[in-house]
Image (cartoon, rainbow, N blue to C red):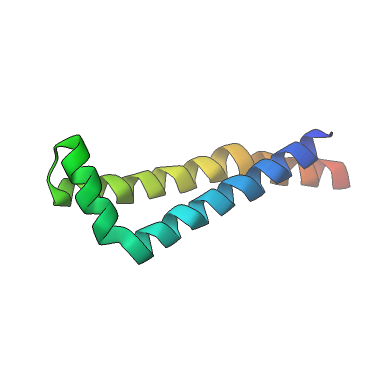
Length: 79
């Protein structure tokens, strides 16, 4: 398996997980927030901020560590 294929599949899997987490947030956000705020002992507002921050950081990490190397490999392979 080439590095290009590896980074491509990593991107697909991680973007799929990000979509799943985002869908969970949209569909059952209140239930998830209540459950996690009780489990972690934080307020519901802090749990919401934590989820929002998690999704933002996860998206940024996907862009930096999956998509950027994949695009760079695609460009260098075409040249």
